[in-house]
Image 1 (cartoon, one colour):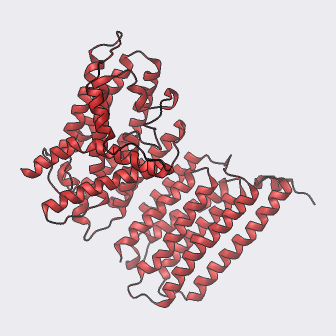
Image 2 (tube, chains in turn blue, brown):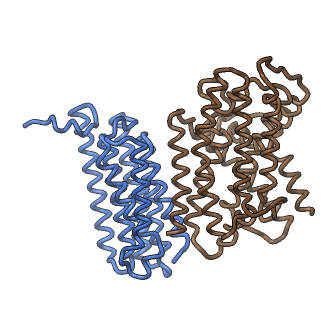
Image 3 (cartoon, helix red, strand yellow):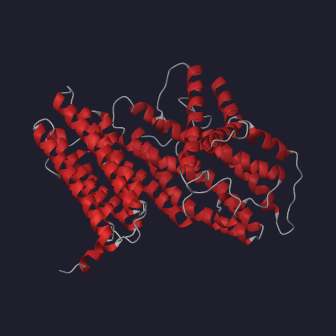
Length: 213
Length: 302
């Protein structure tokens, strides 16, 4: 087990909290892109003997999560001309505290899970659970479509961390398939964002209830 | 013995240079030439030669406060080991003394601010104390993590804990404590995301507004004390950030000085790329610092 792995996961957890606490959407995008980049490094840290599949998975994740998706989101941001998440369902400080609470519980209770021996020391499982929960908070409590996409990405990052437990046995095809799905989903959402913006001249998804046949 | 001497010389002579480095970094970012590196020394000498104007409403507290604050900070500086060397003074439980020597300084600074009877200074004092309520738990959680890691309550040994575990062990909680301590360093020294040391708009200031009525040598003492505070807290943070030891004493001192200047550059970069937070958002940042240090502790004991 590489000691750097835990340090890296802790930084990922810290980025979660910062993403919950900020109202600027550009900052959220940058934080999530940094998180994606760091997660891309995990396969390199976990494998003692670096195979080509781990390298490919890592490179794909870094490229997609760290560069391409954030780039797309920033472009979408520029087109719709909004800067801040104005009125989230749960405020920034409460959602940060909620995320911190979830992280704390994930750290405390992952000890109680019946995990295989080699999975207990790294923080992979608690980090995955906490990140999934933070993604869930972002996804459900924010009103703007772009922030919701970022929540979806954080959620996916959590699942990605969980997948790292199976790195040795999971075929590369599955990994790349997940990344492709993610890419397509974000691509579609970007188009949807554009349409919402044209229809309502706002990105507030709560306005979608006004749609009629 | 010689190490002890270097400790005192560095602690007394180096701090104003850090302010110079920070200002130079900010100037470089802004595309200016900036004041010379030694400007803070010139300022201190200039202030020391000036006369004092003391308001008639003030009492002895107003004059005593800067001196007591400076002495408190210097005493705290004696408890902190610089680099891999030993601290001049060290005993079991001195981490509590360390935390509250700063608090004594803060108490007297705020008391002096209230002593002037100026509404602005009272406001600044209220803010300072409010934010101190949030930064103190963060400091204690950070010290708790290090105490748990090293199994000792002596500040000198406790700060060397990262040096001991850097070989084996788990750096995860140290990363969290380092983030928390960096926020704490910025908040305690009233640097930018929390407070702007250059601002002269009373409504938005925290620390600067409390010393508006001080002038001449007293103001010099306050500025000097503030720079030493930056140095001491920086020395604490460096233990967590760079737990390296070369073995040769001379090299270690050199390394320490370079690390310290690097930290000053880091603070300057943060000040250049960040805007000051709104006053009502400052507690969020400090709560984040508490959370990071607390998580470091949870991670260690779970």
